[in-house]
Structures are given as C-alpha cells and as structure tokens.
Image (cartoon, rainbow, N blue to C red; front, side, top):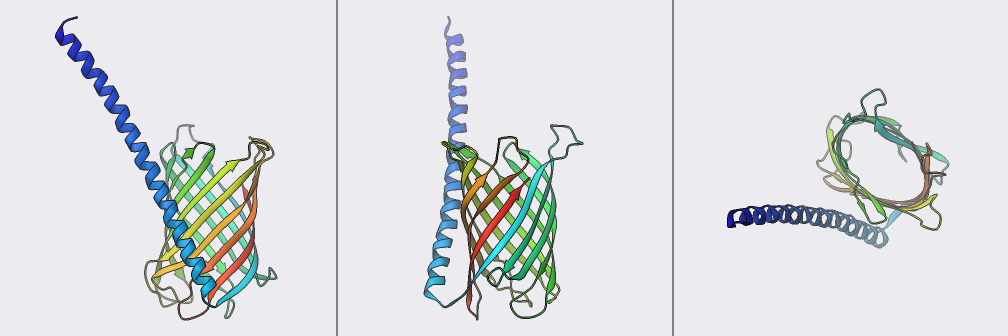
Length: 264
C-alpha cells in the first residue's frame, strides 16, 4: 500500500468517525434541550403550586372527558407526509354538577421527519363561566410536535400558539402553550402504562375580554393508560389533573379534576 492509498483510507475513516461524532453531539444536544424544556415546565409548575397554596384560591372539583386522534390519510400513499388531527372535549365543574366548557378542534399536519410534525387548525369553544352568560370562542392554532423515545419512555413535546377571538370582546388574544408528556409501559403488565404530563399557558398580550400578559394557567396530570392489545383501536387514560389558573385582581383558581381520555 502506498502512502496516498493510506492517506485516502485514513481520511475516509476519519470522515466516518467525524460523521458519527457529529451525529452523537446532535443527539446529546437534543436530549439536553428536551431536559431543559421539561425542567422549565416543572419549575413553572412548582412556582404556580407554591403561589396557589400561599395565596387565597377558589377551589373546585371537576370531570373532564376527551376524545383525541391523529394519523395519516388512508386514501393517500403510505409515504405521504400529510396528517389529520381531531380532538373534542366536554368539561364539568361545580363538583362535576355543572357544564363548564366544550371544544371541537380539527387540524391538518405535515410530517417533517419521522418524529416531528407541523400542524395548523381551527377550534370552536363554548364556555359557561362561573358568573355571566355563556359565550363562544373561535381559535386558529399552529403547533410543532416531536415524539422521541429514550429507553422505555415515550415522550411527546408540543409547542402551540393560538389566536383567540372571544365574542365578549373585540381584541384578538395570543396565547403560547408548552406541553411535555412521558409514558412508560409497565413491564409486568404491558396493557397498562404510567402517564405523566404538564402544560403551561402564557398570554402574549392584554385584551379587552380579560387576558393579561404573562402566566395564564398550568395543568399537571398523573394517571394510567390502558390498551387491551398493541393493535387495539382505542387507548384509554384515566387520572388526576391539577389545574392552576392565574387571575390577576381576583382569586386564583385551583381545580382538582378526574380526567378521562380516549385516544383513537
């Protein structure tokens, strides 16, 4: 072997090594970003919970139902990047005796990679406040989702921005929502899984219908998921949802909710 051949092979090997090293660095950075995102959410939850305990709060119990689904369009090619999204919600308050809110939210998405998707859609919301008349709200929304896995844990990260039109006011409200979810199948009982998630909401502007720039609310969930067999059409999740609502100039809200969700 002459020196030029050796140099060529050495360069190729170094290039391959460099490529893998670069890939590993990217993966490590990705994990760090995800960990920092989760840490931020947990910190916000801790601050919100501490404030809720320290200050006077208006507490309630509720019952929330949800049906959620997303996937590929069956009529399109298997390699098509286009996706559909749909979720609907029905929520009760006043110790689960009174109607609180209903939501219908369709959307469309385009997969950027195996684990990442961009989405956009519309939402219609009917709300019955504690005081005052019922009112409608219309939203447009855009979001990015990622579904990485680390070991036995499956994660969902979601960053969503909403534009909100509420019929009791004229201003358009902007709100940012950051969501992180972890799910781990129980090894001794694979039909069941442990589910943890947290979502923090921030108003990005003030409005004439009551939104104030800054922290809006935080939702934290712990529960269990059940899927009878791996290819079952429906997965059920049931658990406790803690909702903290930041109300400037009034009593903060702290709601204890039984959350029942069906995923299709």
